[in-house]
Length: 142
Image (cartoon, rainbow, N blue to C red):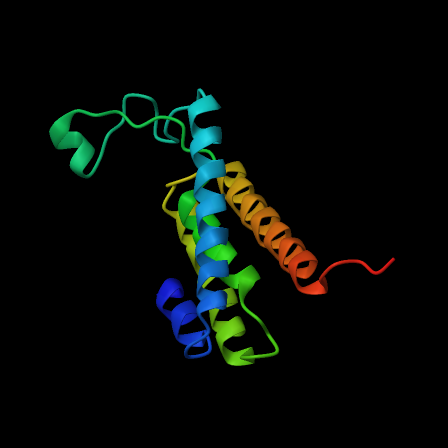
């Protein structure tokens, strides 16, 4: 829902905004992949616990820091321009908060996984904003 709301909030025909959004999401997931490989932690339900499709195929998933769900919803919220659409920004904030709360209540993630996902999303959005500011300033005079 948050992804659909983000895409609908983008101005029609604004391809640079779409590319910025995709760059932010790609940066988030590249950072998550690196951190997941370096994190020797198992699931919050235990290293041998398995549910969903994993219970049928016997695959144990490890390295769930940071939360990709929290990261995606937070990145969509952080990148939304409140000046262009206050209602969309508010909706994305509500959806991100609901996602994080649902992850905690369902015991799908530890709170540190969610905090890590939100932090990576914020860093990716801020780096993209700074990159965008540098590219729009043009060459320095002097």
